[in-house]
Image (tube, rainbow, N blue to C red; front, top):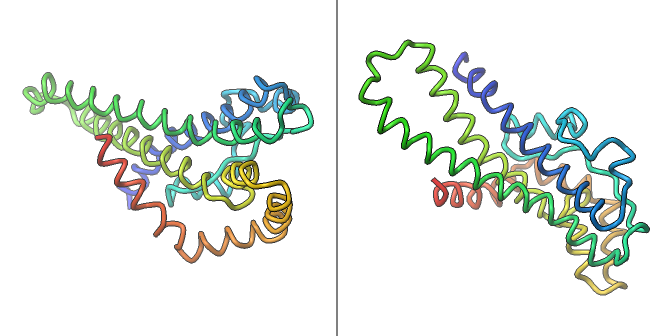
Length: 216
């Protein structure tokens, strides 16, 4: 029980980083393409509190897949709404993939330091430092898994996830309209069913852990 709480506490900063990077990237990219809606709403910030969705955050902490509070975007402010929305939607998952690579590099550097400096003196280290080292690696591993999970999960083409904006932008206008109508009516319900039946986990966790193994 205590070990589980310990892991959750060290995973929490990784979750906050992943959420913040994801939503800030959406907001900044939209701002770059001419839409200042996120900025006016106070969402163009690196403060994680502004981006937290209670249920989505808990999902990320306990199940490693979840979501943040969507950044408001008004596509009427975009010069090329269809193309720009694809780029804006991709910005969040792409930023999480880059962040996962950063965490992977930190693991490699930390492991190198551990092997070259600390292990030879490990018997001399106080317990509190050993506990910190264990927590640090939980944080880094969680950073990879949570960022990959947030990226891959959000690429599923079901509203309100990023993937539905991407697919809608790629479809012909007539098909995109019907797809968006269906998604807005049934998207949330379909997503809940996929998550709680475990189908989403079965689909994306093999991908997450395959990339995780490649990175470390």
